Image (cartoon, rainbow, N blue to C red; front, side, top):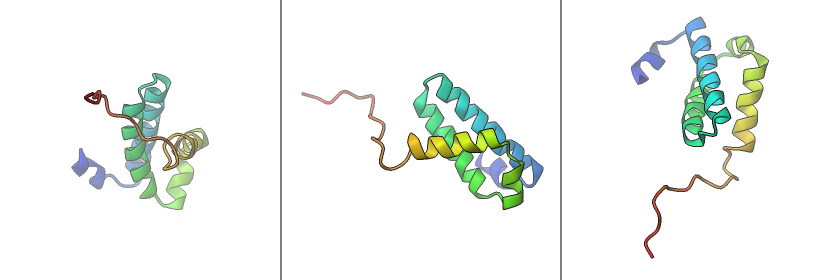
Length: 89
């Protein structure tokens, strides 16, 4: 998958960013936070490679969701996810 991301350019890159944001939103709506976090990070990494003109092509609703979730739910001041393993007593 990493090879495909590097070859995306122009409109294909914009479409891929939009798709990844939508997938992250669907995970968020399903309360699947771990999957949402991963997709959001991938979307954000691709979003950071876009030019200003390309960023404007992404619907505002998706840009706002990506920014709000990044700041409110996944920023450094939030509690990190806990492991699924139970500590030994």
